[in-house]
Image 1 (cartoon, chains in turn green, red):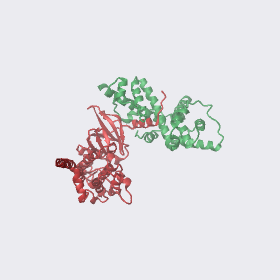
Image 2 (cartoon, rainbow over the protein chains, first blue to last red):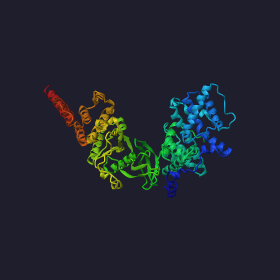
Image 3 (cartoon, rainbow over the protein chains, first blue to last red):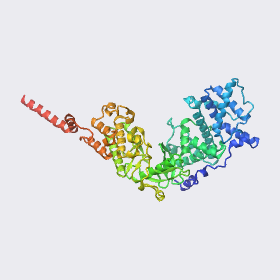
Image 4 (cartoon, rainbow over the protein chains, first blue to last red):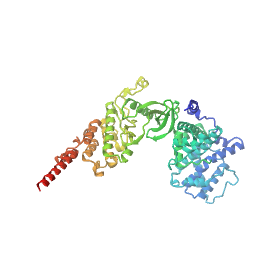
Length: 253
Length: 339
């Protein structure tokens, strides 16, 4: 193993160093600042939470796909119109729990009203791929515990954002092989027996096995940082960030 | 690329996020090997010596008792230098406070998997004897394992047998295991490691006194009970507790007719509810199993004359068959000559 690679790959400084607390919370950004910042923060929040919200509505409220789509879009519109983010207090609960309670309140009201108006037409949201969400819900997903399902979907959404961030980081840093290895090994299902061995990967990219494991170690370390960065963005305070890291990821941040 | 994470990948990525990064640049995590009750075991690379090692990391940092238990496990194993116990190379803390220790990487199968994969009875008993010997060694050094079960025994690629997971072990001689700083702080030497009433271990293989939380009564014979449970599993494929009910333990031969009667007796003696009725030590149990393997009478079973003859005949079946064949041939030859 080349010495310079070892020195480059191993970063000493602890978790605080690896997960800097300088990233701004998008919850804070969505509550204040200029209109442009608010819009960008909203888009980040919707990208992170629309899918957990949609699946949660389907599982908890036992709705069909079409009704859940309407409810999800309606909820996001109401959240924006009525300033649900502005009303969020970090003292009461985590943002994730608050959001889930808001969804429950919204759906209960809509059911009570029984005459739902289609909302959301006047707002510009990020593209919501409901078909992909339905595919992920297939199997026994619909019979799951709704709250556990919501937590799991939040985690899935967090990882999906972190993967995109990792890809972007790798491209910027000229480490496309690192991402390719991560994609081939860590994003390939182990259940289906499709995951290649380190030896196979080494043959694919023309590197020694030790270098493959080094590259993967770097990619995983960077992925961890991306996950923590994304989580920090989606939480309103340092305390909530640490609590969410413990609850969702099982790590002490 | 559109990132889409299925359930299996989600769990894998979660493990990656949880995986440890030691502050010491000497060890680099390669992948997760398994999850245990206390922590996670990773395959790691020792970048200085260019070798692969196993790294056990405690889950969470909040529980001071769990931290102490993990460190104690490392010290217990480090003290027990025996071919049946995985050697510990190093121990430390991660930047986030989690405790870890480094041990030799063993590749093999857990005993339950090994037994299910059609190992012969003789081979299973060979493995069982090695387990008993390792436990006897630990007892001789004042260490009671307290969580023996097939899942905590590993059979290596070359037939080596290792007893794992010493995390809930009871140590008689505490002073030798304590780090110097805690001794300097004046921690009482005879402080019990487990409060009375605390239940540690796996219910299916746990002796009654341990299950009742009677810590003071837990001794070598408690491990003998668990060893009896392992033997029961090797004979029946079931853990003893599964069959424990009001009428008592179901004899192995009721679950597997091919189990030898004397071996059944050995298992049931080890599994006696009263510690006094069990083998006094793991070594004594190993000796009785060795007697069975060599065709001798076992302590656990009083034989009748017929049984003794049958055992004797079975053990000497080859010379008996040779002599019988010789006599038969000889008789036939005599008859043929007389015609």
